[in-house]
Length: 235
Image (tube, rainbow, N blue to C red):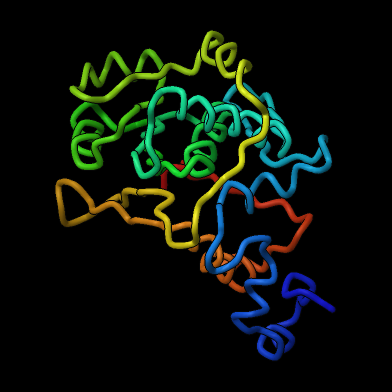
């Protein structure tokens, strides 16, 4: 039986779309669902399959596989447990696109914590406003950004350096997630035009199902296609 991703014409899309057909694109269901599994883990069967290609300013291209993100995000999920993080705690991640960024974002959601991606060009005031608003347990960022922001009470600082990855290697490369479709997965701050602090958009794990409608019929993307995104992942 064909899946929604197999149809390419507008007429077929109108004819065959249904909520049940949409849910069949996912391993999870209305009760048990995890964004990290749906976006990463289930595509990591082929260890060489590329998930992300990052074009750096120096002209260098960096390729990150689904397998790499899957294993490192699982290790980060285990690390969150070791740090005493509870499900529902917020974890702010203020990094440029990189293996560390994707490992931390998906590791948070895999664990059941709430990922809070933050724009790296936020100044100290903008960053502090958002940190004060979401009260994260941990801020993952670079040493440079940490110095700019300064110490924030109640927030542990994690720098994704060589020592960070060496510590993660002690943890298993697989993590058994336990989230439901209605569990909170991410807080995403909009750019905002009318407030000093834009309200955080709160996404549950079910959001991946809703967003897939835009992916299928707004962009027309299909399995195997490449998708170019010039904006920051924080947006």
